[in-house]
Length: 419
Image 1 (tube, rainbow, N blue to C red):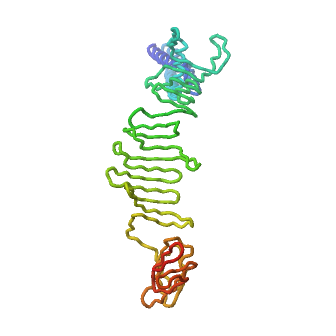
Image 2: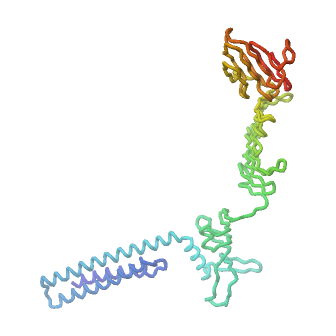
Image 3: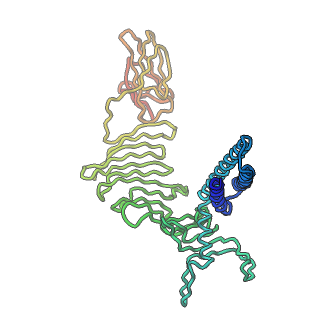
């Protein structure tokens, strides 16, 4: 019986030691701490009750069946309460671990500051040289020179503690040391060279690295430049000004070695692409802007191009120099009665079996081409009207209309020429 009681007391001592370590932990708070205390009080009471019951039963030197039953009941209750205390110990330990994980930055700051306060690190002054580990700066608060004076909340500081991964804050402002470790202070420069600045104004040049492929922000020219390993500009984004319009320009370049192969530039007014083709006898280009789309090639002495533009009347047209149109197709409309040609009409085929009138477009552009034809020999001839412009032919001279079986009309800018 004595051995049995000693075992119970040993269990109690072990649980009590664990309880004391957890309950006094500064990071155990709230419900887990309250539950731990209540479970400990209940368990300790049950230990006392069990030992008292055992001692009462064995006091007369014999154990009756009813006394054995009462000991078993108290022992079962003891086991339940001991199990509950073990569960509350596990919950308390988990609560502490969760707190440490979620408040690692705050704990790190408190531990470092506490060591500095207790002079674990030490501060030395040798002439003009001051050597220390942490310096905390604060707002102006009353200081009475006593250990209980209000230190104020630090708003900036300097720390020489790099941390295991060398990424702890070296300088910070706009926040506490804890916030600097957490990365939420307004300005932070870390020991590994990384930094954070909120609402920063920078004057000068910022470069991602000194050599190799790099990105440069030039505050003086207000531009962002990307250079390849040969220091050639492959991308440039900059502010621009055209005819008192402020806008941005963008340029992309491709290089073979240090020789530029192609370039595309773009701004709010258009886009230009040029392929230099090193070693070739010509360079190709394409441009879009000011209502013009143009592609072509340039040599030392000549240029060939195809251009799509919009005239002063809002009508698109194509102009070419040294270019070839392959597989040309035109819009064809078949008519069986008199009609006026639309802007999109190019070729008109008549199937009428009696005379009809066809009016050429009004207000045409120079170079406007209209093809008029009849289908089959049974179709009647067609009277073509200039629709406000004279028609010239080699046989009739200038007339307002002409009777034809078919032909081509080209507007010269002042009259229609019948071919």
